[in-house]
Image 1: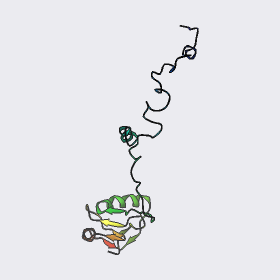
Image 2: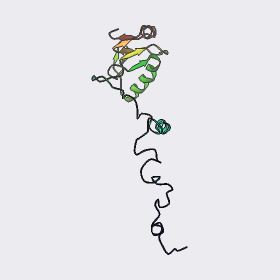
Image 3: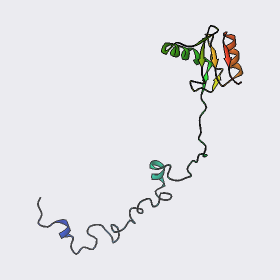
Image 4: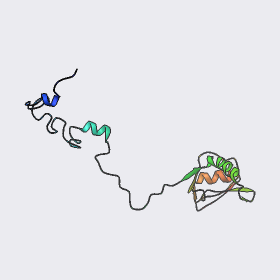
Length: 145
């Protein structure tokens, strides 16, 4: 319904213009502060839900770059051989296909699983059980340890 006066005109002379007691709408007292005030006190539940990383130390890394070690299990060698052989022909030494794990980015060969084929494996490091399984399958392993 149309009215003759706008609300701002109706409120002329009223001390608080419909906001209750004095200062309920003036500053930030009713809102719990301005900005990030109270995040560690009365707004803590909000902080936990919406900004859990706001407080606390940042995790600092040493200046040297951290390079994660890459490893592969014995059980994955057959699958790796099939994928490499389908892409391009592999080098063969003494009747065994060569799997150069170092050039593929692997640093260590672990002994989990079993291997069916006889492979010539080149890798920087390997476990004792990995070496035993490669040799028992008729393969050869080449590396530092």
